[in-house]
Image 1 (cartoon, rainbow, N blue to C red):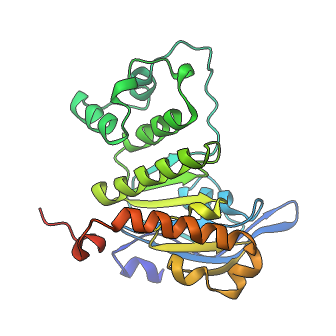
Image 2: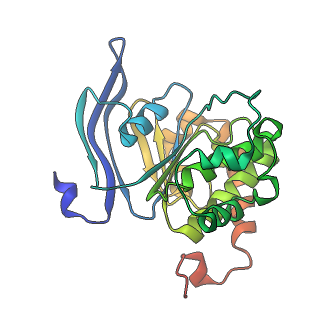
Length: 256
């Protein structure tokens, strides 16, 4: 495959088709994910977003097309719904320890990054939606992933909780420098930090930087009324995120 000659590509699909019950959920989808991308996949419910994520993760085999995954690529996944027996008296720390072997130092680092150190001895059953979501991301980060994939991570949070969660994701992206792929149907939460927005409706309708994609007629046709609402939040988060940073930081060049 041609992608293998490009070392900065960690995941890609080419001419991907996935069928369910005789209908194409994904039809001729091609996508390249590069190191340090922050990709948001948006689209209406039932557009095939989760299926695309599952193919990238290797959880689902395509009916046609090619999938490339770099050798030894480590993937972290925060699925859409996590079934946990809430009556089970398990603490946050124990729940995270079940994710696999780790060192106490690295565990402390991840607890700090996700701002959950103060609740590590709390029972998982007592957590708010936002806290539990941060715990799930921490669990994925303990795998030291090259690519962090999140499926509708903020769907059960209110607007304030969604904003806080995406701000945390952005901080994670800046500080950990991992590749992030987020699936969402919350248009107004397309982050200012996304390097690429992919608009999916069984095929890729359009893709590009957030401020460019939102002007695309196909995007507006698909999302119509949501666009103005989304852009209001987009500009709000963008100005707040970057207003105190100088220009080189805006472009993510950090000097050690």
